[in-house]
Length: 599
Image 1 (tube, rainbow, N blue to C red):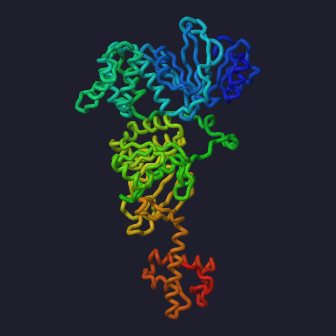
Image 2: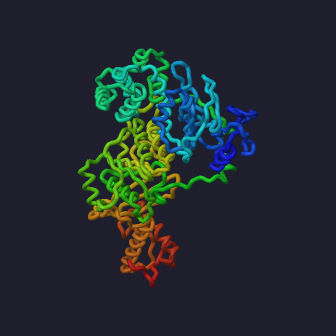
Image 3: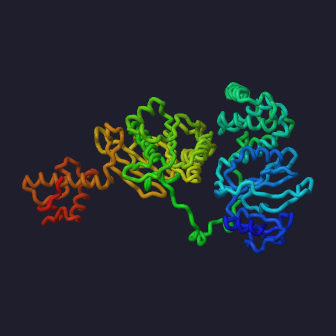
């Protein structure tokens, strides 16, 4: 039986560890680095799995409170292990596919008695078959599989649930009153958990007190909404961790640490000294050559890859119209500018729009018979709940593909620069988490922003803000709308895409940009026509061998202008393409007399 279990795990890509009967060890000292075979499994022994070799993480609730909150909050769509403790089934092992974010085990989450609440492992031996003794009673606890589903990918939202389990388990033994205790607790949540929405606080209080005080008459949605509303008033003198610590009779520094698991308390910093052994943890490039890595995913192939894209244009350049159309196109699998879209779920956050405007645009764009994307006109700020809200949407839809946030200015945090931060540092840090979210989930996130009016040699330097925005993004799009019916341009550049330059025309009847073609080809055709027309007019004056400066003068350009340089390059290119011939005099050209292109 145990060998068939071991073989089944091996077949699923999970590394096994043969163990002594009723134990968590065997005779090896290199238990976490050695690779074991099924033949080494003892018939009456235990069986463990090697997390690191299996590319897995494991959340391991230890205390009774942690087990209760884990069973309530952790999702069941992954592989889950349990134990039978004194005849009662308990879920104690939640396994996830590694996302590379966890570099060492987390084992320091302690309650007021010093007992470990729950652990988060990335490099550990986890017993999954057999029995182990209870720490207190020494009675054997049999292991079993509650779920053998495919591993769910680990992400920041699961890490947040782990933190929430630890926090709830730490304070649970000390809260004996629902109403007053809940009021003080929510006041601290409002104060320290700035990324939590009112709904997050409501859910936490409701579920927490369902476990801690299941029969309390105060545990109602209306009561919590009243408390949350009262605590949201900035004029309220909200309680902090010191007041809460004194109320529950626990050391203040312990309580401060607990709140630090789910939020940020005064004096906390984001920077902690860390160590990484590059020799043992670095990427093995030889092994990487044969490793199968999923290909890059796109929303629009090949111009909109997974990751964070910045889409910028001047005010009233119809960026919002274009992005709304793109969201509908991706949702319905329609082509965009001649490119195939990868159909999937889309979220459009029109943060400068109203219901009336959205309805009007959908109708004018002719989209009202298509399947719509998910749409909202309100969103939290960056680093204050937006990333968590996006992760929740990604986890809730079957095929997340594209998210558009229109505009960046509406979600930028109101906080200022950090102490030693430059504008570059601030902009780069602002988008760091949302860029990471896009990459980890394999979705495309587009931030709509603006261009400044100052002329720039490098087109992307027109983007409003510092170059920190350019540095953190995976791709950049720029759109310039031509005035009075003139040609518009759409250009892009990114880490994983080739540069592109398209010519567009704004169509007043369809409220869309019509794709004309590749900008270089369109411009070349226009430039060639201008040169040929000018040379024909000059021939009429008797000038048969024509220099570029003659064409420049005829067209009214100054000798040192960009247009003069463009004319010179175009004529040289046309000569190389046999559309012009060399004149008898040095530096002159003549029109080809036969097979002239028809313009």
